[in-house]
Length: 103
Image (cartoon, rainbow, N blue to C red):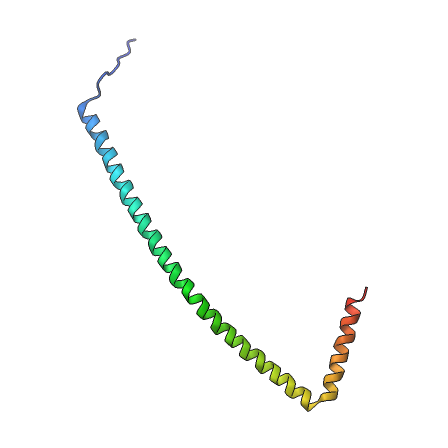
């Protein structure tokens, strides 16, 4: 059995390998550009959405404030209509709270 060694690869194979490497470089550069572009767009989108959050927060806070004021007014009206019942309820809640927190 004899082993044959190849000292010089065929010129066509060498050319194919060089072409493949060059194509890989081009593909990698294209991929790198695409990822950079994608990250830029994601950053712009995130910035735009982040700008919307404070406005939405202000709107929600305003709505919550209006609802709380409405509930507060309703409670005040009920207390004015039936002050003895309000005092009785407050006393009952106080007693219940004291019983629950007592050891």
